[in-house]
Image (cartoon, rainbow, N blue to C red; front, top):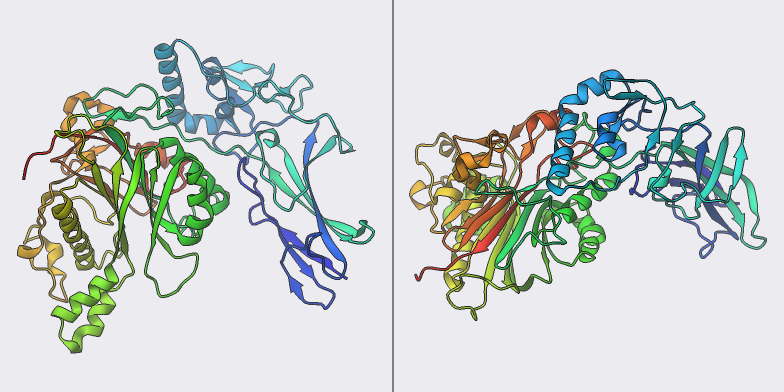
Length: 599
């Protein structure tokens, strides 16, 4: 007879909005083992599995720490309550926790107070309020989970359904789901979930034997990062956060996002041991990344390190719901499978239409280069060095919006968007430069044939001032740069490593904004390079690898997404973290088309 051997969850910490999928191991009547889902529609030997999920409500009410969400809260910041910060952010598990977090917690107070002063009103709370009559000291109230007058509410509606499924001692079990998977809701916050799996006789519809069960930890709310603002390069904040329901982009402007989202294949506990395992799991990260990306409401989105399976099964269908058309180019790895990552470009269908797509495979370019320049005896070694599976995706789009300032209003407004992820290995500096040069020479041909503005986005794995960065920003490289000494194949001839595209780094506009930008944001820029101090922040490395370059002769930068502060990230050691689900930060620029000069 069919029997259940074992049930377990990849992570026992459930998070609101992140689907829970138990792993159920079964033994068939022939003694073989399977993890397949055996439903009423496909029974085995007349038996199938029935699933149930329960929420366990204790008579004791629980609030969770905002810094350590797996810990129960013991104190609440009354300053948060006063300025109507979402109540979930007001809880802390200990005085030590509150004191350690104060430097970053204080920013929430300042922003909330500023929003009240600007808008004259306050937003409704996202979560319910935890009321307690505990003693207060310095704006902090003690939270006692055993007080009978303590109540946990969730908005204006009832927290739980009226029907009680089971009651045992001081606990009440409410049935919340009847499928194998379950996605926790805000009603589940602070409560343990129970999963139940039982074998059922298909003929009698009665359970056979005892149920297999598992209990989760308490459900925690999904951490919500502080909103990042669009900052005008003239130094004036764009009103509000990125609420593009009342679009920030005006006629003739459009926004471009570039973001290395950290492939799940690379997001290992060994590499990022400082990140909690639940925050590193793909079920959590994908929802957090989607929430962040959708929140930016960019017109064009360039993502790197997107696994092919995740593109097809998650990002493409989910972003389609938000009005995006999707294009993808996977790396040219010899090992095929859904874990191979690549570059994905999305654009809003109401703002752009697709004209043409080009795929750049640096492996093919390496083959052509070695055939032309490398002696036969050295070709194998040359290909071993150059063939690294990196790619670029180039998309030509036509704008559907009006373009103010264009000499001929009836002329089609095209834009060419390149999205790439350059080789990561630091010892292959010659390969990085060769890949960037190869991409730029291809873009030059497109620009010459169509007289079209260029956007070059991606993770270039090259710091400001390096030869690849200099080539992008200056159109040439310093022949005396020490990195050029690494050239075992003899392919780096500085006189020929040039391009004619008038490219400028979008974030260098912060430097040109000067004193009007404000000290807070100037501190996040490197005055020596006019680039961000970092776009990649791990425990072992902090620096800038990501850029958005644009054609300065036909586009101008209107505003930029604010950069993050290193101190704010270091409270979680580094990236990724529960708040930010990649080891890179997203870059976003708003551009305006401007009159073209005749060539």
